[in-house]
Amino acid sequence: MKYSYYPGCTLKTKAKDLDAYARASARALGFELEEIENWQCCGGVYPLGSDEIATKLSSVRALNEAKEKGQDLVTLCSACHHVIKRVNDDMKNVEDIRTRANNYMQLDEPYAGETTVLHFLEVLRDRVGFDELKKKVVNPLTGRKIGAYYGCLLLRPSGLLEFDNPENPTIIEDFIRAIGATPVVYPYRNECCGGYISLKEKDMTKRMSTTVMDSAAGLGAEMLITACPLCMYNLKKSGSGKIPVYYFTELLAEALGVKEEAAKA
Amino acid sequence: MKSEKKQAEMIREISGVNPYKCMKCGKCSASCPSFNEMDIKPHQFVSYVLHEDIESLVKSESLWKCLSCFACVERCPRDVKPGKLIDAARQLVVRQRGETYLSPDEVPELLDPELPQQLLVSAFRRYRR
Image (tube, rainbow over all chains, first blue to last red; front, side, top):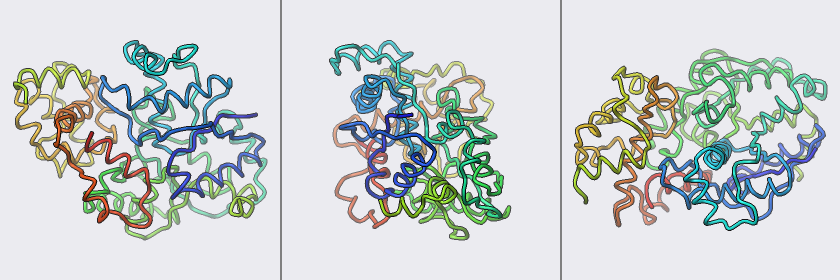
């Protein structure tokens, strides 16, 4: 099975390992991530203004390329996923944005939200299946107590993201169980780490990331996992430092026995 | 800057929000992780727009403390989406020439070796045009 794949800017630079572990894990699970050509940065945050068009075009280009290949589009970074999924919804359901974006794009056939956007975790849950994933685990992470950090962008607004229950999600806990470890549920798992304000408001970010980390550590988590390079940065840089933070793909690659292979790539 | 009446109209237009639907339950402010840092609280944004007091709104610190975490958008029982109102007020400011919360000149001293590109592009998109 081949998917179109949108890595995003940070997965080519500061979060190369998030990407490498995902590609190696995908191969081990029998699917391929085919990077789309000439992708451009999604912009990091979804442009909320209803009159914003130009800021959405990089997402439309990626979505259209997947459509032309007849493939679903897979994302890995929470922010890219949020932006591309919401732009796709605009192209499907908001006539004004669809018309004006297509006027810019000048495609042979207008784009109207045909592509299915999947986060890598959704591929694991809905396409591979956590039961199948479990069967392919060669190195179960038995005994490890892991806190899932969801943050904001994968979950909200839930009507558009359709990722999981926004207040009581289970997908990452189910993932943790599938790789043989033990999930630790803690109250701040879907609270913001500080996001982009960490550039200028260091104190606020410190307070928020510390609250998340202490909440998890206080309930017995030995580590946190995340899908987002910005959450990773904020939690590591501004959290209390009580527990380490990993990308979920690193633990996946470890459980599938391909961590060394990914590290070499 | 345009008249406050015109600006209030622009906020409604950019946000796509109908502030008349608000029933003042306060769930947005109760959900907001930046509540303590905000001078105008999320549930108060609606009143400022309704009363066309845009002068106070565009000077508000809250514009730069909102995280776009969508907690208020998710939980609003009336689909008023205060986060979108805040963003529209922020747009009124940053779409004016020279009005911005982040200048490229101040970036070098904000950097550190681990800082991800994602943070810079996100901040630039929210804080300036």
